[in-house]
Each structure stands twice: as structure tokens, then as C-alpha cells.
Image (cartoon, rainbow, N blue to C red; front, side, top):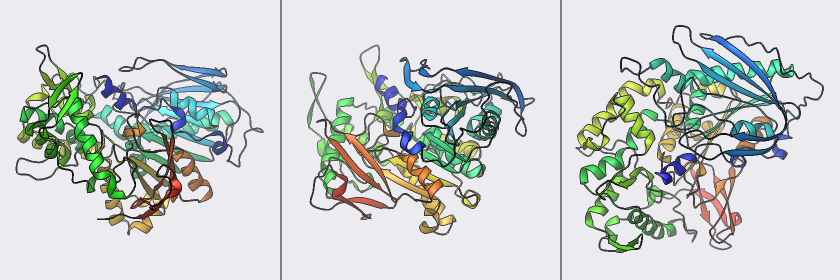
Length: 544
């Protein structure tokens, strides 16, 4: 479970430098707040349509280190140093007759404001940021905002069912869509009140759930943001949340639970076999879809697991094949993409029961979605789900929730018409949200909006080989270094990104760099030069 939580934590903005631009980027704004008044008291807020304002508080915070207390399931205190003095405004909204209480938090730097506004998304079932992202944004000269949508923390879905055991659709709507829009409206009002002038540019920044929220903003509220950075977006929510329970269903149905070291052996063998496909000896699978490694090649291989030797069996290989192939109906119809070859098997988690037998340990987010939102039984025994029932649950989730939280509408004409820019990168080794779902969405947008060139004018996608969910610590490939900086240059200077700079420090301490290519182009090794240097690669059409 600890490794599962580490993987999940990749979607939480704890490491501010990974997702926020540096001081040089922030100072690029042509506006200055030096001549405008700053107030951190007597702030009035007009309620967005359909809401009422319950309370407004404003507190001045001194410059220094911001301490972020742990939010379950995390236990570590996070400290953000060198945060300038700021005004913290909290606005509580409710939808009359619903009984919800959604808190919007806005942090506004007392000095050094660049005129920019940044809204921060959430992760898993948390709708917003708990302070680390806000602090980082303030350090970079942004006024920043987030919302809790009136729901709860990362893995707490106690809000999902009402007293009658029915899904609380009002809170689900908050989480899915409307609270993010209301936060944008309120946040900009607060900025105007505090600084005495409106924002110059507004941005969305989120990964995972935050990425999904960014896409929802582009689809339903196209005028809220000038630029949207939506990383590893949890779009197609109603489909992939069920799909990511597939590895557990496979292991239960096949009555085979490979140990973590066996899964690692399959991954290592696949990477070794498919690394040469892109021409670069870099230990990465450039395109998992092109990797045809057959796990049956490892049958009979002995691997060391916690000091003991285990032999890979035909049953182990069969489980891995099904997991990589992805969810299917009993008749063989493909429902969704599987875990990308080369990504971690976090969704195929296992544990030892009281009898010392290995059993499944479902990842908490899809487990909660299926048990609570589909079965309406939070304690439902997921290990009893058969292949046939899985297919029915997949269809049920689509039918009941696509219109609410699917976030897969390819009609972005209004966003394009508003002048907005949408920038996304997604790791090819994302173990929690397969990048194929994002690629499929991009293709559907192209079909709906006149082809790739027209879409590139406002929406660009970059795929990152070897990068895990939200650039988590299990990544082996170079991670995007300043995607938000690339977005601001696109929005404010018209410099559309052709590539995204990326880097990682390998196990030997060497820095590996790469220029991530704009989809559908891929990085190709030139055949000479250091494979660890971005200059040894070119962007070229993908091979099929």
C-alpha cells in the first residue's frame, strides 16, 4: 500500500518547482502592481449565478515558510520556504436548497504580483489544492485560487451517498464541474477587490483530477481561462475509473496473484526487448503500443523475491497478457486501454492475508468509484467481480455518469473562439491513467474541428516516454521542466511550443535531457551523439 500511495502522491502538487514557472518566467509580465492599492480587509464578493455567499474572511500572512499539515492518507508535513507576504481570502459558497458548503481559497502576494491569476486543480477525489501549490504560485508572482467543491480529501468519498443510500448528485456536480467555474468567477472578483484592477491573464494548472478539471473548463466554461495546463488528465472518467480495476478482476478470475518482483521482471524484459525500436539505447519504450513483447517468453524464469527464488509460471504470463491487453467483454470486445507496457503494475497491487496467501489489493480510487458510485455499497467485496459483471459495470458507469463527469466532449469551438490555449503532456509510462485515452480524445477533437493543423492552433499534446503518472518518482524518462512557462509564452507572446524541455537525473547522477515532441511527432535518435543529450534527437513522424 505504501508504494500505491507514493504513486498516487505524484498527482499532488507537493514539489512546487515541477509544475510552476521560475522567477524569470513570472517576471516576463508587462504589468506591475506597484502603483495600485492593496487591501486585505473588507472584501465583498458577489455570489456567482445559482449560489449564495455564506462567509468571506481575509487574513494577512507574514512572509516566511508556509507549513502544510498532512492530509490523509499522507503523514508528512510539507514546508514551502521563502513565501512572500500574502493575503489569504476564504469565500464559502452554497447552492440554496442543497446544503453544500464549498470553500474557495485565494492567495494574493502583497508585492510582486505579475497580473497573472492561477487556479489549481485537485487529485483523486480531492477537488483542489491544500496549500503547496498555492504557496508556489504566490512565490512565482501569481494570485492563486483553489476550491474544495464542498467534498472531502483524496480518498474520502463519505460524501458520495446521501442518507437514503443514493448518490448525492449535487456534490458530484460540484466535484465534476460547477465548483471549478465558480472558483474562477470568485477568484477573479477577489483579485479585483484586493489589487484594485482585474487580472491580465488567467491560467489553470492541474494534473490527474486537476487535468480533468482543466479539460472540463475548456469544454463547458471556455471564457474562464486564457491558458489551461492539463497534465495526465483524468478525462473519460466514467470509463477509465472502471477500467483501472481490470488488473484486480483478472487476478481474481484467474486465481493468480504474481508478486511485485515477478511483475518487475516482466517489465524489465519488455523494456529490454522494445528499447531498440526507437533507435536509441536509452532504456525507454518510446511508444508502448508498438511493443509486442510476449510475456510467455519468461515462463520458467527464476527471479529472486525478498531473498527467495520464485519461478514465473504460465499462469503468471497469462495474467500479464490480459492486463497489458486491457479490459475486454467476455466475447472479446475491447473496452479500454490496459496498463502501458513499461509502466508500473500499481493497479495490480497485492498483499499477504492473515494466512500468508497473496491476494489482491485494489488501488483506492477505482475501488471507491466502483463500490460507492456504482454498487452504492462502500464495503462491497470487489474480489467477487467476474468478467461478465465487470463488463456490466463498465456500461453502467458510462450510462449513469458520462454526462456528469466524462469530460470527453470534443467540441472545443467555443474555447478556440475565446482565444484560449490548451497544453497537455502525458507520460507514456503512466501507471494510473493510460495516455491512450488522452491520445484518443485528441484524435476525436481533430475529427470534430477540421484536422490536426487547425487543432494545433489552440491545443497541443506532448507525450513523455518513460514518465509515470504526473511525473512521479518511478519515472525513468525525462520529465517536462517548465510546461507552465511554455503555456504563458504561448498565451502572452504567441510562441506556440514545438517541443517541451524535459530532464531527469539517472541512477548514476547524470542529467538526461530531451525535447518532447508535439503530437503526433516522436523523438528519434539521430544515430550519433550522446543518447542522454537532447541534441542527439530529432522530431519525426511516428513509425507504424
